[in-house]
Image (cartoon, rainbow, N blue to C red; front, side, top):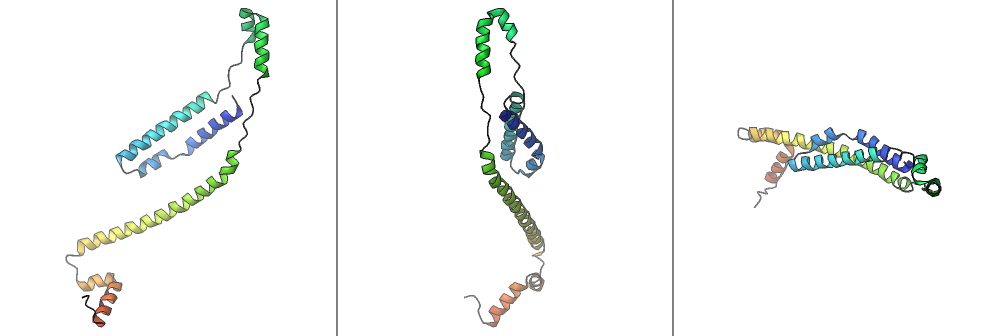
Length: 168
């Protein structure tokens, strides 16, 4: 097996161990998203299995003596010489060094966006809880109780009354 194929197989295997499939699955909301996610995971596993089986094994060495006995040494020697003269070029990775810094920066940006999103989700959840609490109490709440929670509105209404601005 060539060094490049083995390297690809090793990288794919290491990547598959780092993926938190269960954690990502918990974030999915719709059934359609779950189906697509399951399809993605199956495809990933198939590719990973193919890489592990097909590219991680060295080819079996050719038994030249076996063929010499059945075909004749002259023809087999000619094939062996041609086989040995084949030079498979080594793969030189020129792409990874170019894109690795960009990828690393994307990971940093992703972490920042994730933190920002989590903070915003927290804020929105608090706001939703406040609105739901207000919704329960609104039918029995007095204006003074409402203005206690929203002093900016009390100030706005007081200013409108003081300036004789009744909205029409």
